[in-house]
Length: 319
Ligand SMILES: [Zn+2]
Image 1 (spheres, rainbow, N blue to C red):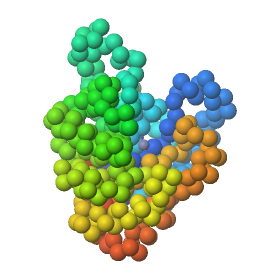
Image 2: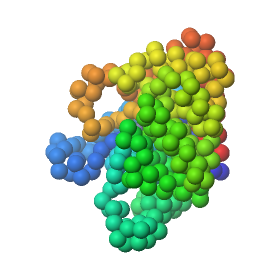
Image 3: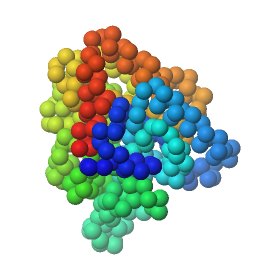
């Protein structure tokens, strides 16, 4: 990609700078919000998001990749308002997030279905990547799909193959939400490769929830980047083990396969905000700058390796 679209325009890959590859701005279902979030204050939420993202930039981060797609409540006009005038680049995605079924909008339309038409998801994804999302003029820069504990269900496979086809046709890179405990990253690699995807353009997301070096190096040896991207979710894997795993991978020469992030958000409607802050106090945008980078340095990860992880790997992902 010669130029990378962001929420506010286009940048060159070298302008990405220090990049967190998996951060949401809002995870917010609009149907749910409209019906049940009666105390929603749009202005307050936008201002709060701008404050948190400005702070992230002040902490040394230049760009976030936001993989909020259909199924997670993508709404680009709100992101545009938040991104306006911010020094942080926000790079947006297209794709579909489901652990099992395809949304009802696609249930009856598609190859071999009641309305037998070419896969509509692929066309929607390509339009988002090449023309823009809805009427916002903002283009998606990368693709996202998911494979969780239920594995490659028919709905998950359909979304993943459509994402793969859109990547093969446009060259856009991919992030996959995977569950490392079921080794679903390997399934994603197989399916995406079958669709003609260049596996070096794939981040196997949530790999950082695992300490299984055999599994992780297998993914990396097949060419993909590892998403060590849930820093702060110590409830899923403690901080020390997340750090130990990265240190071990760096020692084995895998710096060029590591990306880091928090998978945090300014607001997520999945949890009560107070309960979330109590259960995962470090799950916020500040943790990598304040805790992760200093600890990796203390553990012997060099400036050069950190630059590879934070700057060069995200740049190569798009180039
Ligand atoms: Zn996420």
